[in-house]
Amino acid sequence: MFARLLGPTLPPYDPLVWERLPFPQKARMVCQSWALQGYGTPPGIYLVYLLKLLLYVGGWLFFCGFTPGLGGLADIGGWWSTAAAFEKAILWSMLFELLGLGCGSGPLTGRYLPPIGGFLYFLRPGTTKLPLVPGAPLIGGIRRNAIDVLAYAATIGLLVAGLCAARSEPLVLVGLCVALPLLGLLDRTLFLAARGEHFWTAIVILALAGADFVPGMMWLWAALWFWAGVSKLNHHFPAVVGVMISNHPFLRFGWLRRRMYRAFPDDLSPSRLATWMAHAGTLLELSVPVLLLLGDGGTLTLVGLALMLLLHGFILSNVPMGVPLEWNVVMVYGGLVLFWTHAGQSPLELGPGVVAVLAVMCVALPVLGNLFPARVPFLLAMRYYAGNWAFSVWLMRGDSYRKLERLTKSSGWVYDQLGVLYDRATCVALVGKVIGFRLMHLHGRVLSQLVPRAVERVEDCEWVDGELMAGLALGWNFGDGHLHSEPLLRAVQAQCGFSPGELRCIMVESQPLGRRTLQWRIVDAHDGLLERGEAEVAALRERQPWG
Image (tube, rainbow, N blue to C red; front, side, top):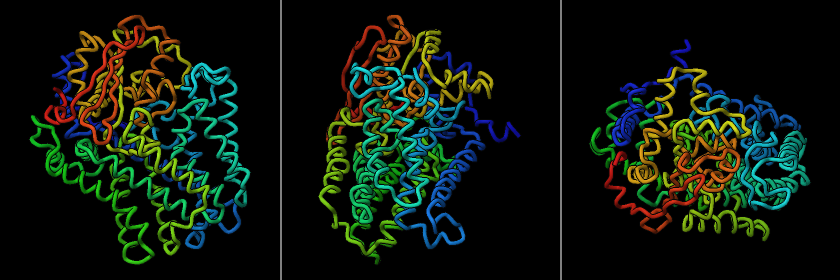
């Protein structure tokens, strides 16, 4: 039973032999394996994520039950779209994410045992954090103190109070409007983990508009779809489509997965089919908000809602790496509440306060984030799953990775987590697939040139993706390369004391909208910046993942 439920699909090579091979050969083998097998996720893991989705929906039903007339399944058709139920959905979603139960949890985000970080870190003094103002008295340290823990606990308390209230509590909403930015000041990881660009913005609209929240929420939902589409107006997304289909839990057809690539196994560039699917997906994301904002409950609205269900249904069916499953559910729920049950309401009936919030969160930050992605976290820029992310690779020589034990944390070294369940070969196979995932994306193809510049022999190093490092050190990760860039490296170095050459990091930035290059850096934990440069995206398109 264990083997069937938790046994991963192993690659068609001996992982223990593979890990000792030269980098170009290793890269080619793991990428070819990903193309046909994806991550090799055990079937039981999908069941765990399904149960988590049921927990998410069940939690919403439970908290709705504190409001008279809500929460009953027998009459859900009469209350599911009420203002009270919608507010509970927003508060519960933020609580779910802030506890670490949502995005960035479980094996598909490199978190095995324990499968979550979240509150296991955020309530624990001494854990590593990324203050917005490093060095500031009391709040600018790199390790969590009593102020950090109490602020997090108080925010959780406010969310629970709002969820358990019989009716909307304006003081709770105002408190949350203040509390989450303060958490972000103490540790910017927390604002991102709470999905502040979405749920905090929604709470501010609720606090400002009260019962007249619908128009503001319409623009927020529309912005989330629109900017997600804008972020895919580049050459990165076709590679994402191939990587996703190769990892699809249901579309396990070899012929289909091969068709995602130009000429498997020798040319893993996106095929015409993958490129067409990417363009169709981009058009879909851009069309949904336009149709729903223009619709008034008639044909445009129905078409927009159908396309919305198609969009989020496709994402959910993929169970993508990073697993933003609950977020897709609340997007569908909000879309139906706002654009179906309130289809006749004009999105132009906005108060000045709501306009100001929308101008900052839904216009200014996304514009800046697309033009200057190094300055704005990809979540605040609403650049969702576009494949054009900042990322990093951490290369630790020999057994120097054991110095990470000096960090206060709840998660062990990645191989130690997996070693509880699997033998060494299976552990190497699974972690190796993470390397394949990174290389298969367009920007990952720069690594074939940068790895030899960072270390003399990569075979002598432990290769750890920055996402795994953020999960281990910070307690949360969700595709934001700025969480595992120089600030985290400095915090880790201050606590672990790596010697020169023991820890080298390759850091690659996103490609700015309208520009032809992306920037990269090679940094030594002890000696600092060693080299920086930029790569032409056109040249990456002509290169295979292994070089």
